Amino acid sequence: MDYSTETSPLEKIQCDCLVVGAYQNLPLTPSVHAFDQANQGFLSHVIQRGDFAGKNGDTLLLNGLPGAACKWVLLVGLGEKQQLSGKNYLKALTCAAANLKKAFIKSVAVGLVECPVAEADSAWKVRQIIEVLNDAAYQYTHTKSDKETESKLEKIIIACGDADRDQIHSGLLQGKAIAGGTGLAKWLADLPGNICTPSFLAEQAFILSEQHDRLDLQVLEESDMAQLGMEALLSVARGSRQPAKLIVLNYQGGEKNTKPVVLIGKGLTFDAGGISLKPGLGMDEMKYDMCGGAAVLGTLQAAIEMNLPLNIMGLVPASENLPDGNANKPGDIWTSLSGKTIEILNTDAEGRLILCDTLTYAERFNPDVVIDLATLTGACVVALGRIPSGLLGNDDELCNALIKASETANDSVWRLPLWEEYQELLKSNFADLANIGGKDAGAITAACFLARFAENFRWAHLDIAGTAWRTGPAKGATGRPVPLLVQYLIDRSRASAS
Image (cartoon, rainbow, N blue to C red):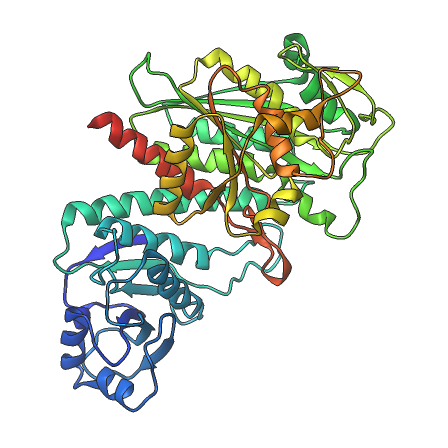
């Protein structure tokens, strides 16, 4: 995708389609009013005759405007004439993007930067335009013989008028980086499990490291992990013919001795549940059990492209979880890297097994904070649906920073309790702890399990089981929580600079 900015009046911008906003009862923003005047009041006439109500999210595609350099104009409703909320602005953008999937639209100019949005500057608005339009234009074609896509969009022009140039440049940089990182995460997650194996993920990490001088890569093989004592992680791969990998990415963007942010992403490239086999219906979607790992790669790519002055470690434990004569069995007990023993009561609770050893491994990097992200529990989907990701952690400052970042990025989270009482549910008669806590509070007890391996650092856990992909007719990865994590890193870099 090609991105650019344009300060010319709207009527002089050459593109296939110009996107402009209108409020209810006709009020137009200054630049749209000037555009309307240059087109003999065409827009006003259309609105006055009742063809367009202007309610938030309404759209109307028009052509034949006499004084416009564009071929088409897409009117987008902004609702009542007042400062928009961030969500209403995004609703207008999303509804506009849905109308741009036309074969004849290859270039789009968006004239919505001047619309006032509560607690948002021009940089935020530019960034959201890029993110939303990129999301709408994305279409998976990697394993299709017909590479034709519904959207032909190739060029996005931000009509910014007299807006602050520094803010426009900042929004453009952030938007491009986040859209690129989100796109990488979506592409990796949408690939089938027979292509996107643990080795394939490691290869993609290698490609990323080759593209960026300040990104170093180390891949731990099964023999390396066995020597370290990662029995919990390796137990998950016992039923698979694909060797497990622990991908370790190190981005040095800050001062040499500055403690890093460690991001850990669950990389289960396919999860059949193991001996505790999942139901067949919907099992194809278990290729998405590596969305956490994909998001770590996407976040690192975005952070590097923005040249963030931070040290960031990305750890991706990658494996498959399949039934086999050598696979984990309910009742098996393994010793984790931490020395704690774990009784396997359900082999489908495998994500926490690969994460717990990786959390312990993260200690060697002396992290400032550790954030893990995982499609961990169906219980989180039951509790929160598919709107927010679940957030749990042992540090209020870290969790509050993630909540703040989620609000800015429009990548919602909801914090759940991590009370000590829940730890009682993980008791085992035969090991230090069990890998499940029963039918109650499944998302919380899964995080409680991880918390036992995160006692020596500030830690937060994101359960993205409900938000990492869409199901049904629109099935596909979302790329979340890349926008949230990148915003958190942006906020950190700003705080360190002040």
